[in-house]
Amino acid sequence: MRVLLIEDERKVADFIARGLRAEDFAVDVAYDGLAGWELASGVDYDLIILDLLLPGLNGTELLCRLRRKGGKAAVLVLTARDATSDKVENFEAGADDYLTKPFAFAELLVRVKALLRRPPANPNHVVHVADLELDRLTRQVRRAGKRIDLTSKEYALLEYLAAHAGRVLTRTMIMEHVWDESFEGLTNIVDVYVRHLREKVDEPHEHKLIRTVRGAGYCLSDEAAP
Ligand code: CA
Image (cartoon, rainbow, N blue to C red; front, side):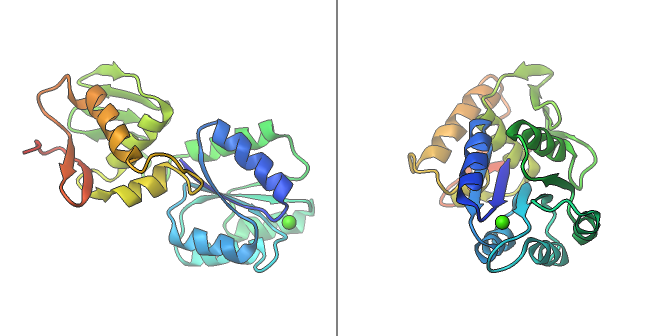
């Protein structure tokens, strides 16, 4: 799950980002409205946590632009203001939830998880690719009816591949969606995780679902790998 946090108070931003990363979310942080808009308009986030009072571009305007552009990310608005008119204005602009500062991290986390559980455009939260089955609510994975245990990063990678089944995803696309910008690990991290997934998802079965497309990337597909 990829999260964008737009918050100009660095201490608050770093505190939230640290907490969410500890929960295995991939978090990008922007410290002003314009930097936030640049990321929000260019990357496909699952959730945006948005402060309202921001230098550069305020949160409400950013939210309006995002929705006008067709951006579907869930948006959780953070603000020190508690006026009902502000809440109404932001819900009308397309916010999904609202949290008034100061708040406890535990409450933020509960709301983040609730928003992400809300299945997106596709009301069917179970994704099937051949005999592979992913339940996006419980994060359980089965193949041919048999439960497969995955780490949270492995799950995130498989969910991303499954959500775009049949399409070739480049390493850059996968990096951007499953890891975050602050990630400074192995450059071949995607290949390493694909290998882990193959061991768990494909190795025990004759019909392989994860394909390497040479020079391009990876594809999860119903068609047998050549
Ligand atoms: Ca602020």
